[in-house]
Image 1 (tube, rainbow, N blue to C red):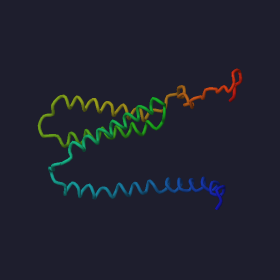
Image 2: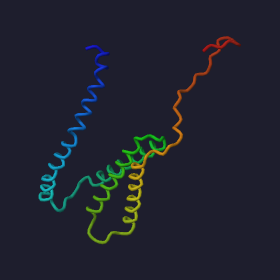
Image 3: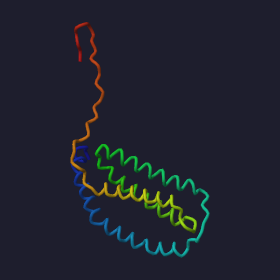
Image 4: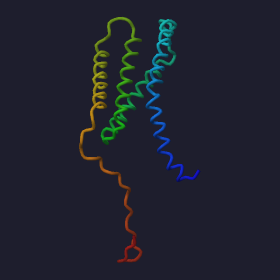
Length: 164
């Protein structure tokens, strides 16, 4: 098969895969969701009530580093008016929600001190802002300036003569 023939058939192959995924993906997702129900029941019945985690700090640090990375990347792309910022903002909000869930569900019993609750409110506010940003349509505005390669200085071979 020649390169031109391959390139000519590629769009039809892509559209066939796209049509197949549009038709089958929802069904596969429904089946996967249904399969999770027995798994959740099994976990609820079999997991111990308490456990000691040897790498507790590393787990939390990794979660918070992922949150920082997604937030920083979303901010950078948003400043450039790049639509790829939206999924990163959603990812950051999801990581915040997971962190808050696990932080509250693994906290020691007793009244929660005020500072962590205040921090939780700030993190929830930031997560909500990320979700609002992701849901909003891109505001019309001037496009970001194009990145131009550096120009080379003109080289003169003889005084008064220019070459390009």
